[in-house]
Image 1 (cartoon, helix red, strand yellow):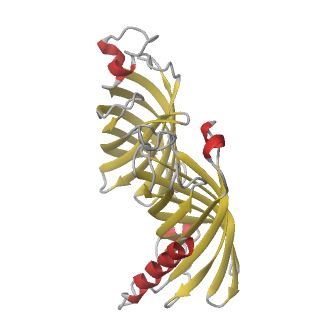
Image 2: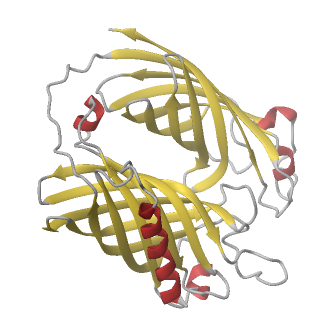
Image 3: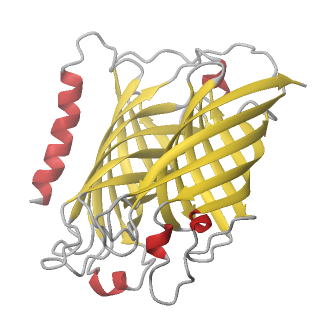
Amino acid sequence: MRKIKYYILLTIGFTLFSFDTDGQLKDNSYFKAEAHMGFIIPEYKHFNLIVEKPIQSAEISWVKRTTGKTVWEQSYRYPEYGMTFFFTTLGNKEILGEEFALYPFFQTFFVRREKFQFFNQVGLGFGYATRKFDLYDNFENISVGSHVNIHFNFKLGTRFQIAPKLLWSTGLSFAHYSNANMAEPNLGVNLFTAFTGMYLSIGKQDTLRHFDYPNHEKKHEFAFIYAAGGKHTRALQSTIFFTSSISGEYRFHFRRRFRPGIGVDAFYDSATETEMSAPGKDDFNRIDAFRTGIHLSQEFVYDRFSFILQEGIYIGLVNRVDKSLMYNRAMLRWKFNENWMMNISMKSHLHILDYPELGVGYYFTRKL
């Protein structure tokens, strides 16, 4: 059965390129196939009881090279991007099942030489778990409460050119899938694997371009963002509770690719009353549904897109549900014109996911 699944992965990949009649996909691209071997990280004790064997994974990818047409492509050492179809076992087919995932990725290089590259890759998309929690049929699976989940992947790896059109890759991979607290339970599953595979060059491969580009112009940036989302409580309820936030941010355009910043936040969480109704919790007041805080941020920029990490502390209106002092947000941002932007983010308390948000914001910049 496993060989059949791997065959399906390869067939999908080759079929993708068979319909590329005008060379848009094939030129400056690769077809990649990789195999993984590893284990589930036992973040919670129940994994030690139900995981019976190491995990095995396989993936196929379409990879597109950039060739230096823009300042951003050259400053990131000609990054690559693409789409991956991924399959993995989970150490216990009866309880945890298996996972299929489809996600786009972005790959940058620490070292990029003609025959050797050292890279990191980040991917985010959707996964499908064949087994999920069921109170009657699968009550031991307290990790995932839904078939459809968010799949995150991070890789560190090396590539070696072993033939004119063939590269060998090897490295380490971390993957996480969970449903972003949109269904319960939602502990999630973390996968750590070693991988190896091959890149096959497809179509015409253009020479990398080199040109002198202007120095980075330092600026101040100010932004105001409204975001909204939803969450389940930790009580296996079916209700989705409304959440929202308002943020004010300042960022210093210190480098072309990196912008540190600081900001203030106000949160609203309509699940607070339900979460505080559990035995041993404090009495609920309406103001408890609101929280305020300040945060530091680190923004990693590629043209109009960026990935942002925020570390915040509740000040003023604090978190009275679980008494957390700190909060975190990981965010993808798109500036679609000179003043307006969109966010998709995940708020958490350290490693405990809270809820996803979708936001829109207004920003402006001032020169030094």
